[in-house]
Amino acid sequence: MGLPVFEKGSYNCLGVIELIMTRQKINFTSKLNTICSALQAVNLRSTEVSSIPRIKFSTASYKDALPEILEVLRAACLTHKLPLAQTWVTCDQQGKRGSRHSDENYRYCISTIDEACFVNEAEMRGFHEACSEHHLLRGEGVAGKAFTTNQPCFLPDIGSSTKLEYPLSHHAKIFKLKGAVAILLWCTRTGTSDFVLEFFLPTDCEALEEQKTVLDSLSGTMRSVC
Image 1 (cartoon, helix red, strand yellow):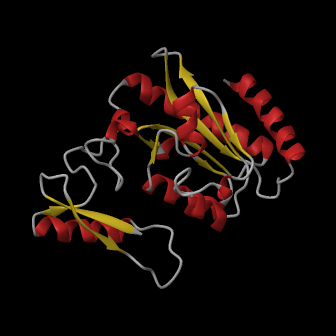
Image 2 (cartoon, rainbow, N blue to C red; image 1 turned 30 degrees about the horizontal axis):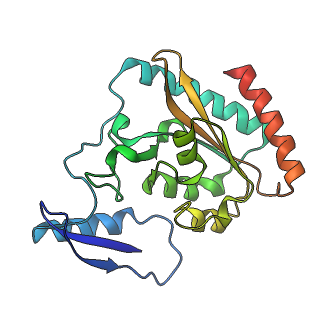
C-alpha cells in the first residue's frame, strides 16, 4: 500500500510511504491512523481530509429510508442466497471520512452506509469492512459506475477488474467473489437518486446463464419490495 505525504496546507507531494505487510491483511485502519497521527505531529499530512467530520445523515428523509433499505437488502439476500449487499452514497452526503480523500476529489468520492448493509455470510464480513474502509470514486466498480451512468451496472467477474477499474478487486479475489450488480435507488422522499444498492451473486454462480437467471429473479424481487 502506498500513502502519499504532503506538507500541511499544501498539495505538493513530498514522497510516498510504502507499507509492506508480512501477512495478508484486510483492515488497515489502525495502521493508517497511526501513520497519519505521526505525520501530523511533524506538520505533514496524507490524503485524508481532517476538516470533514464523521457524522450521520442530518435529514429525516435519509434516516427514515435506511431501515427500509436494509430490509430490502435482507429480503434480497435471503431469497436469492446472496452473500452480501451494500448501500453506497456520496461521502459529502453522509460526511464519512476516508484515506482516499483530498479537497479535490471529495465530492466525487462514494462510501458505504454501514447501517444499511446486509452480510448474509459471516465470512464476507471482512470484505464488507474493507469496502467500508476503502472508499471509491465515481466510475470505479459497479457501484461507482451506477452513480456515473444512472443505470444498473453488472460485472460477471468483479475480481478480474484492474485496480484502476476497481481498487477493491484484490479483496474480491481473496473472498472469491464473482458476479456483482449495482442499481440506483430513487428516494421518494427527496425525489433524487440518492443511493446505489450493490449485490454480490453467490460465489459458486459463475456461468453467465446462471448469473442471468439470478439477476432476473433479483430484479423481480426488487420490483415487489421497492
